[in-house]
Image (cartoon, rainbow, N blue to C red; front, side, top):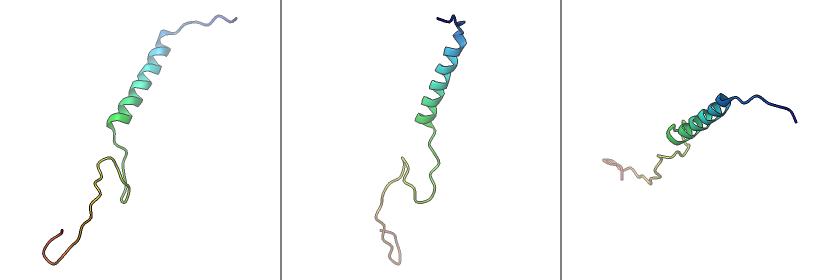
Length: 54
């Protein structure tokens, strides 16, 4: 069995990466292009006449 030197900072870096990933996935919205449904997209049925949209 090989002896390996313990590096406490290696564990902190992986924890930091996990927290960055969690925060990025939770609060950063991916850009959505035209025609792509995103989390804030509302489906509407719209009709137009001479004076207004219904």
